[in-house]
Image (tube, rainbow, N blue to C red):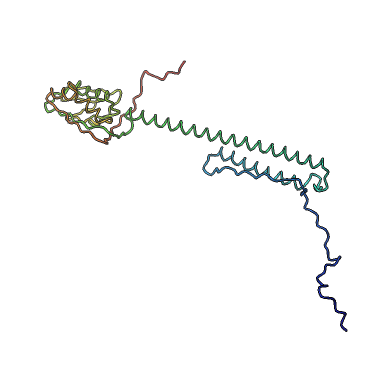
Amino acid sequence: MSGTPRPPGDDERPRPDDAGPPVDAPAGEVTGSPAAEPAAEPAPATARRRRPRLVAASLIAVLTALLGFAIAVQVRSTGTGQTLEGAREEELVAILDDLDLEEERLRGQIADQRGALRELSDTDSRSAAALEDATERADALAILNGTVVAEGPGLVMSIRDPEGRVRVADLLDAVQELRGAGAETMQIDGVRVGVSTAVTGTPGALRVDGRAVSAPYEVVVIGSPQDLQTAMSIPGGVVDRVGRQGGSVDIQQRDRVVVDALRPLDEPQYAQPDDGD
């Protein structure tokens, strides 16, 4: 037996018992009370920094994460488990004040760590600059002392002495006039010339720092090629004096010469640094 037909559309009408229970607002949401969480600031990259920087940057990241976590936890729950929805106005104000204080404290710690990181970076920069300056000074002193190989523009000078009459004074004059013209370093027949270099012997049997040298004497010098040649060629200079001894001087300017003779570092016997007292 068929039942009485229902009017069309009756099945789609909502019935009172079909309505579900009201859904409570999620705990921690308060209408009209903005609780925007401040964006966590990214920790600086520390992959190629030294350990102190890594520690400082890691602390910044941790403190930033704690800031966001503390705000989220305080907004979503209270210490007694009660929802903010049921809290009184003065309790909400107290919670917000606590959040502000906690945020201020964490931001202060982040600022301190960032300051420490900047100080470390500045210290590293100053140390690197000081190290670079010290290295440059050490290199310059090593060239002047003759303890390292040097290269640069200069000239190669050959002093010929077919009659064996070139004297100690003639070779010393050549060294002094080259220095006066700006020679930075030089060698004579493979002997590096330093501040304590001595030329001894007799014509035809000269010695440089105790080592025998023989004509033609080859002098390799680093400095301004034009200035060095001018100093050798002035009237009454080395070229003229060697010529009067029956010899000759051949000078070749070059864009690059190599002074590769080395000398042991001179150790002073009596002099010592002043301690400033």
